Structures are given as structure tokens and as C-alpha cells.
Length: 404
Image: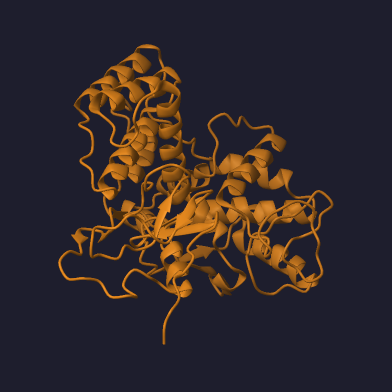
């Protein structure tokens, strides 16, 4: 039975050589082939080469660490089914696809404006682009990611990446300029203290649907030390109430791309307003009252209080049909709630929940191993150690008892 070539995109999902990307790219099922070889599907932005995160060039099918060369390919060797294409696309996190696509598109647009060549780019062009990003005040980490994306684009197109010696020198000088100007070279989200969590929970104690949802979002995120993507990805069936509290199944996370999953034990809270179990009960009861017992845990609610994803609901605005919140929405919920509680929000983000839970647990006496396992950090995570150093700066300050 012949399997027709899969159309792997049309401005939604595109796949090439085993990697996927989303965004307004055009999908081609053929590229100019090396004589005698049949190319696979390929992604191209209009008028551009294969974007970063993809792996095909000049008709050669490539993948992570290998190139298929030699024998002539058969008539179906350059095709994948629609179901395979969907699985390939789902293997790459949305945030990763967006970041790579955005970085590459910005670089090619800059090259067009300045009369430079994006592919292949010279070392001088790369250094000049880094300098242009510095002039725009971009964070050093943003510049580092942009350089990595440009080099990836060269590799997947079968080209030698530009030398980064000059670009790294520009970035090093820029870091020094920022330091001299008193600007941080690395932005770190402020950890949300438990006292601030209580103020937020009290501000959200109104009983409205949106406040019930937001209180659960903030309290559960803090108690799980969750990443925003983990919170947004939870379904109702992933949270089970047990005698000791809640068991939350995180099916996939940043450090678990193989989707092994982890189970997070969340105990009862001593304060009813910041108790994750009570917050879940209130939200689940509200959803059940609307006839919804499955689907996303956290959902979009419009200005009229209409909950997306419940039977018969027609909320205003746009979004997924099931109403699932995005990771970006988690941060917006926290910032909006913090403002209502009269808190400063300059350094707050969704990551403040994760950092706050970790520092709160460490301050209360929890050890690093249990904190790391609870929050899904890799062993020896430098990110986790940064939070701990912030606490130790005062908790174990060498000047305590020095007689000052």
C-alpha cells in the first residue's frame, strides 16, 4: 500500500529531518536533491534556508549525529505519515520552537536591512550582529542564544558555522559595559516569600471563578516548586487527593523530555488560604458544577466569568478549544494577583513561584536533595544552588556572633 507524502505544516507545524517547528513557515516536501537521492520534507521560511532546529540540507537526510549516505533511496524513503509528523512535532517543546524561529527570523531580517548575508554568515557579520544586539540593550543570555541559533542554522544546512571569536569578544566587552553601568548581566526572578504568598491568597479570597482559579494557580505552583509549563500542562486527572494531601503527576518537564514523569507529594497547608488541598477542592467543585470533570486543570476565563472548556461554554476571546492556559498566562496571573495584594512586581515572574517554594523549604530546614527531587531539578543544579546562596547569605552569615 502506497503512503502519500505528508504535508507537514501549512503555517502550523513543519517538520524536517526529524525536527519540528511551528510559526508561519512554508513547508516543502522536496528540496533540490543530490543526483540519485530522494530528499525528505523540509521547512523553509519564505525565501530563506532551513531554519534552526531542523536537519536536512542539499537533499541529504540528516539527524542528530548521523548522515545517511551511500545507497539510493527508495520511493517512500523521503516521506512520513501524518501520524509520524504529529509525533515528531510534539517532541519539540513549543517554547523551544518559538525561541529558535524568533531568533533566526530576527537575524535574517537584520541581514536584509544591513545588506549582509545570513547564510552562510561570516565571522564579521556575526560579530556585527552581536554588537547590534548589544546596542539594543539585549541581555547577554539572549545574545548567547541568538549566536547558538545562527550556528545551528549553518550546521543543519550542511555549512560550517561562522567563527565566534570576534562575537565572543564583543559580548565580553558588553558584559563589562553593563557591569560598569550597574546593570545585571543575568536577570533572576525574585523568589516569592511565603508572607507574600499569604497576602496574595487573601486578596484572591473573593469566591469568583477567576479568583478561585488564580489562588489555586499561585498556591499549587509555590507548593510544587513548579515550572510554568508544568502547571499549564496539568490535567484534572493528574491531581489526586490522598490522606496526606495531594499527589500531582507531572508527565513531562524541561529536564524530563523523555516523559518519564514524576509524582510530587503536596501536603496540607496550615493556613486555609494557602492550603493547596483546599484550593484544589474549591476549584474542582466549581468545575464539577459546570459539568466538567476532565480536561485541563487550569483554564481560561473571560471577563464575564465564562470558563473555557466546560460543556456549552462560549467564552469571549481566542485560545485552545479545551481552554488550557499557556505558560505565559501563569506569569500574568501571578503579577495581577501581586498588584492586588499591594506587592512590588518589578522582578516577579512565573518563576518566582518555583524559586519561592525552594527558598521557603530551605529556610524551614529542608535539605537540598529533597528540594531538588520535589521540584524536578537535576542533581547539582546550579540554578537551585543560586536560590540557596541567597538564603545562606543571611542564614549562615559568617558575621553572626562576631561581636559587632
